[in-house]
Length: 277
Length: 282
Image 1 (cartoon, each protein chain N blue to C red):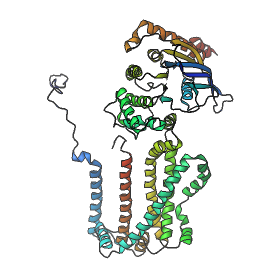
Image 2: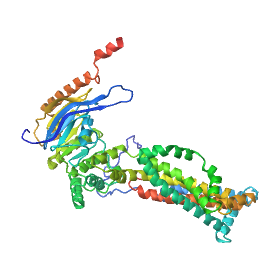
Image 3: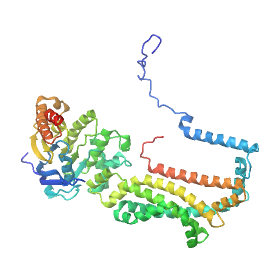
Image 4: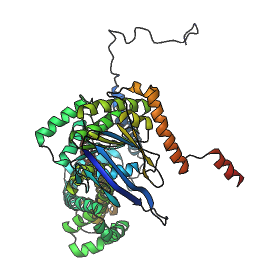
């Protein structure tokens, strides 16, 4: 991996949020430095409040960091760019546009392709995400999983240098989520994009990625990285392999420790101590 | 369960080859239940009313009957044409005032919904004027515009303006932030955001505003003519009342109600056109 050039380099990213009634800002992210190599699939996991979504919003360019900078393909970002595309947790499709028109939407806005290219790319990516035949359907006529496929196709079709994914399967039911994970790996193997994927699901992160970055909370920060050694292509059967479960357990232990420290998980002693007090 | 106490099951060959699935059909009644029940209820009330009128149980000085109202309406529109003349005047007042209100209020509402500072500047005036019954301005409007066409059109304008404006503003301001964020992530310009997100999501609000403005505008035209002038349906209602011509009075009521229902139905069609992406539900 060391031989491949870095696609995304984040240096010293910090972000604070001022809350009403709080005298001090909440440190959502403190001094996060990380890099993602070209073609690499990286997941960020962490307990809620660890700033993983904040980091993604900064990388998308919707949020400006208070300190630090992000370079993509060597260029520092300032706002949303043609070099990126984001897949959101909610599908965020325009309800009055059909599948086809939603997939072309990102390309129309980025103005990177001409009209005939947009049509070709839309058709190609609708097929790639398995929605051929649903071009003329409106979002309300699609299931949640299908809407997320449209969301993914809209982002992929813009041909981004890096694909940013913000818990895209979190709102789906457990079975659909598993199928979508396998689908994403299939699509990724065809599209060959660099991916930064944020999730709170450890098994999802371990299944999908080359590297799992664990964020800690209060303050939000980079805690530890795990290399994911499993060979590709991967199938859902991987999730039942002992070495997979060992890796997941290792990551989970770290997050549990982090959650306990932050008071998200409370020990029995803490509860009895409180009761006595 | 059947007589043997066994749970009845779907026969094994149901759905097998040969048993093509059939789309369940709705009867004529099921498809038109609302229209049928509504019409029957109207016919029922009219029948009782007409029976009482025919039996001479209604004093024509105080009330009228369906047949008399219909006869007066027919004569006024297609016979002597006396109502038609007033109707044409009112229609002209209404159409002018309502069109100008829509043409001004829709763009202004969108601008005020989108830009914060102009909204903050105009908000107190809009709220103040909206909360004031527009009728109190009638004498002033007569002073400004006289007793003729212009003052009536202006009253309609003033009546219809605020519902349209406020709904358009609300439509823009309730635009889904998530959709705006998604558009921004793809480098949408302000114009892109407006054109592809704000405007389409505001259309239903604008239609609602137009329908409310329509109702207010109809009140405006009748009230304006009622108080000042010598022409129009509102004037005719006043005259009919003073002279105990209850059949003429009710004929005018039917006309105003018909106009409201008619224009509202047209707007519903327009709304349907813009909402074709919504899954249909009754």
